[in-house]
Image (cartoon, rainbow, N blue to C red; front, side, top):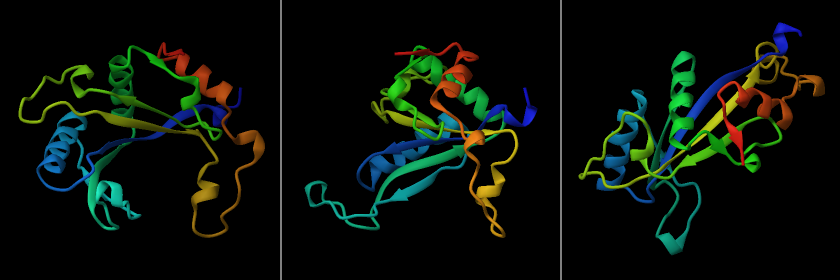
Length: 168
């Protein structure tokens, strides 16, 4: 097989939504920093939602991005938190997948903190081929990625077998 067609983890985005600014946002920020050992960025609302009393620009969550070897280690721990099972419907058409960890205490190596309470988070994994994905993202002469180079759902399922992940 062509080595440029090998699938690798591009990045992992860990997201935690709390719905409002203040103490709960700070708790989520500290927790996410503790789990990932990375800098955390606050996310802001883009649309108005009167039911939840949210308006554009309100701080409603936190996120961080993990790349490289740290991403692989984090992914192994995240799969352990969900018992190495994810839904097949969580894989999109471009070869990315997401899953949620309902309670942070399920994550290996993290103990319950009564000051934080119980919070969950989402793990979004972006996959890419070893070569050729920069073509779509570069500033000058950007082009589409060819159909043969896109990642299919079947290839993602095969990729997940190396982590011993079972599809539900």
